[in-house]
Each structure stands twice: as structure tokens, then as C-alpha cells.
Image (cartoon, rainbow, N blue to C red; front, side, top):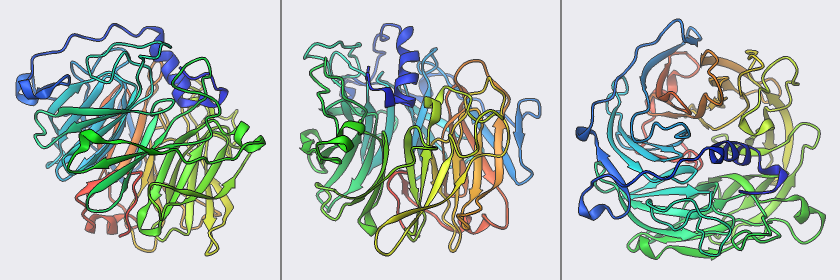
Length: 468
């Protein structure tokens, strides 16, 4: 566990997870090629159930429809088997889980079905995909890199970092290899390189000086190079320093999330203490262009999203680390919110406005800005975003000084930590990974968002933006 006070979402959620973490389950029978991963094709267990909208449980705006829900199922339905991030490829969605990941067939968004599940504990298991490869982030010490490894300790043999899978057969994902990274991998960002390789920008909190794997200072990220023809040889090729020695470095405790816009050679990093703009022309060696701070309103810089022409960046603040109720009347509208920054031609950032969901939540509902993505709408800046128990919000920041919500979906309060972890737009629908309720599919029908339905993509990693 990380000792830094800026750990936020990761620290608080993982502390909750560690308190009663059971011993790792024994591997289930799989094909011999599956290595230490445990995968179960959909045909090997009872099929998933798609639930219709329930008026007693769900509130939606008039322009949003709750299309489907697939609840958690064994082996990824334990007490800390929380749903996390999503990635997409063709007719498939990949959903991370503290205990592994699930591959869904979404060729019919109204009837998503489970193709396979991989039992591979390692919080948070944030996920990305490219070609036949899938990557998972592990930010808790394990006894080894394999899916059958138990929890590790502070000894030198403990492992955390990136796991790599072959998903050429989506019914039987196969563990390939793993890469240890300093302080683990809380999240990672897929960065296209050339035809021969991709890169992963690895974000993690730190330092934890008493452990060998997370030394001080932790004022950096890790860059992993993955040769596409030999992914098992992936390795860390650089550790770019984001803040030099001095006060800035002391305050920076690693990064939480990085969004890249390769066509613009830009990246926006949400780091513990700062928002950072980077030049990624040299993919293996990103360079810092600017630090921005908001010490009055921002507690934990969590994530970032560019608009399509890269003239704005939305940074999110995860006040309370994802387990606190920050959307009630006691918390200011500028805290636990989004800040919209203008990105000028001089590549300098200037803050324009804030956005927070206008629907007040109860003091029992964990609620704060979390993962989202841009909708592909020419001439408009509209994104969908998760807010934990605040639900899913679709909001317009075309006028960055007066952003507004235009649609939403939310459930009533649940006991403990819950709600939407990630919500992304993909090929006409919104997919939300709910911590305890599983995969939700939504559709928004609105004149402002309808142009997005004309845009089709073959792959989506939300932190790897492409122009449309």
C-alpha cells in the first residue's frame, strides 16, 4: 500500500479492499495454453441476464434510455470484485475488475453477452487493448506476476506492474508476460509508436520508502515499450522525471492518470498535486511543457480529457478518493468537480470554468468526478462521465465558462462503495462499468448528440484520444 497522503482513490479503495481480502481462489480448469490465467468461456457457465430499466431503481433524463445491464457473476462477483475500467475493440468490450477481467460481445448492445472471464486478482486491473494484446495495471504487491500469485509483502520478491495477455482467441485469453514498474501501475495509457511497437505510460502513486519497489522521490512515470511481434520482451525503457529536485518534486507524488493525443503530440497528466501538459513527439521520452495548480479547489488531480481540436482540456478532481460523499449541499460546486482549461496556440493552459453534476446526492452516496470520454461530435465539446453513485452524466462544455449537463442516468443509493467507475461512448451507445452492479448500456437520443451516431470506430482506449 502507498503511504502518500495524496493516494486518494487508489489508497482509500485499496485500503478498503485489503481489509478483508480473501486468499486468492484456486485456478479453474482451462486449456493448457492459457498459462497461469484462468479463463471461462461463456458456454461453460449459465448465461448472463439482461435486465430492463426499473423505475424503482433507476432515474434517467428524458433523452437517456437504460438499454441493458449484465450483473456480476462468478468468479468475478466476490465482496471486493469491483468493476473498474473499460476498453473496446470491434464488437467486444473488455471490463476490468479487482479480481480479473471480462470480455463481452456487444454486437447487439441491447443483449451484451459474456465471451470469457479471466480470474487474475490484482487491483485495479485497469485495462487497454491493441490488436491481439490486452494490458492490465496492478497496483498492489503480489507474490509474483502470474494470475495465480497471492498477495505480496514488503520483501524484494513482491511484484506489481503491467500484465500482458494474448486475446487473439477472446474465448480463451492467454497470459503472456509481465513488467515490473516502480510503485506498481495504478493506471496506464496506451501510446501508439510505429508499426513495430507501442508504449505504455504507467502512472502510480508513491513513494513508499520502506519498500524496495517504491523508493523516494517518486516524481516520475514509467514508460514501457512493447514490441508487437515479441510482446513477451516488453520492458521499461525510460522513467521521465516530471518535476526536478526541490519543492515541486517534493509535492509531486507520482501521477494518477495520463491521457495522450498522439496526432497532436500532446499528453495531459493528472498527477498528485498538479496537472501537467507534456510533449510526446518522442514517445519514449515525453517532455514537460507546463504544470498547473488549483490549490483552492483541487485535492486529487485524477484524469484528463482533450476536446477534439485540442484547444481545451478537462481535468477532474477526485476529492475524497472515490469513497466520500462530495455531491451533497455541504461541498462547493468547484470541489470534487471538473475544471475546463483553454489550451492556447502557445501550448499554455488557462482555466475557464468548472462543472459538477447539478443533481444533489445524499450524504451516504460516494460521489465525485471520475472516468469519462469525449463524444465524437463535430463543432461541439460534449463528454460522458462517471460519478460513482452520482451515476453517469452527459455534459456540454462547448461554452467552457458555462458548462451544463444535458442528460443523466443514476441508481438510488447502495450500501457501501458503489456506482459507475467508468462511462465511455462507443459506436452509438454509452457503456458504464458499475462497481457492484456490472455492465450497463445506455443510449442518448438528443439533437445535440445524434451526430455522434454517425462515427464508427474499431478500437477505443479512452485515454488514447483520436481525432474524428
